[in-house]
Image (cartoon, rainbow, N blue to C red):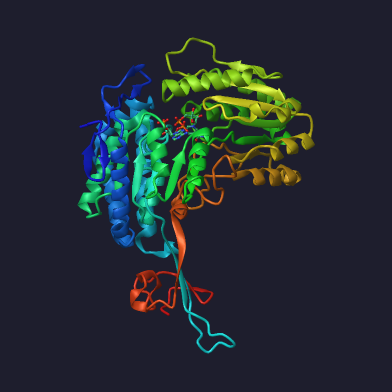
Length: 527
Ligand code: NAP
């Protein structure tokens, strides 16, 4: 049952006096549930509980945290088809996508459980004492990663499961030993409540402290701002717009005690088309890209919003085929009327810039909240001189930049803002003649792709989903894959600490049998 209430730890609570409804973009009507926004009192309660829970939860063994994460996955699965129905009614996303995204979410929770179970992930290192060392004796030092404290997670609009309530950020923070307060995304608050009920059930079943998880509703920016400012909150995970992410980053930096904000934000994901590849297979590349641009109505952070090539017959073929193919794709529904309004506004803004030429635009009538896909083109000089054209147009939109030569191509890449991905489309060995282009691209992106598309983010250890600002606020970390746990820990050293008081990961006898760096050698031996 959906109550519209917040979860303040284990308790459902609705003390606030602001209520709102979520929206079904397919039917273009409000959903039935009345959602109550969290009050200031509830925000404080959730933060107090999380802070109290941290004392116990940060000391719980990897085995027990893994059991908690696996039970969350089982409980989400147990919500069955009803959860999928609510997801679709709040996002317009089809049942197939709901099933796929739920699978990814369960997979993430279980992958983190496997990752933390044995304790290797804490990066334990031990440098033993040398009391005889001259002129000064050397102390015993032992270091490992420890949890930061309560983490606030902002649910993402475009991934109601995988980057929201029990998504990647929450799984990473809980795995690290941090209680989580979710600032539920207002577009899918009911989905968030259902998933929260699964998390709370799992917490109770596995004996986790009350306050290890809370879920707060909001329909405006105030609840999120209060949470980020709260002294008991120690880190933030965010996925969304550059404007939102940057506002929260600045807020956190201006606290008396600044805290890290790991925001994964906008990206236009440049795709570089090399000349011989274009000469040999322009049409096939264009067909692939017509699908990638429109995949998920273009609502992926890795959507290819910028395609760059050097003027040639091959590039003309590519542009012609892309234009013909893109209008063959059946338009689909966006997540919300606000998102489709933003798409139309941002698209119009891009098209109002001088020098822009529309290549193809879907022009038939569409249902409300459906997006009309569009591809446009511009000369390299124009693109270089107009930063507005570098902004993300979130939706099925892409801009093809036609460069006059390879030097201009390199200059465009060098002048791009930070990006999540960069793609090189090359003939066999062609790329080896373009090492300067590849180097320039590597400096601007978090992941480089060879002869593929940027859409589709594999969840695994070697994935890097992040990049130089503004793709993310800290390019040293990934938001996807088990390494994302590193965002919510800090390294901590014990000096000359008694063996029996050390955590198991650092004890001489190595009870967890983990791999540690002992005096510069990686080993699973005892000290
Ligand atoms: P958003 O505007 O960035 O909002 C995301 C979350 O942050 C929401 O919960 C929002 O709260 C909160 N928020 C935003 N600005 C805030 C502020 N100044 N202070 C405190 N909290 C703030 O993104 P969205 O609503 O999910 O989607 C809108 C646009 O974001 C899209 O059209 C798209 O351009 C972009 N987006 C990009 C990606 C990507 O991966 N590149 C993903 C999703 C969205 P409220 O909603 O309650 O205001």
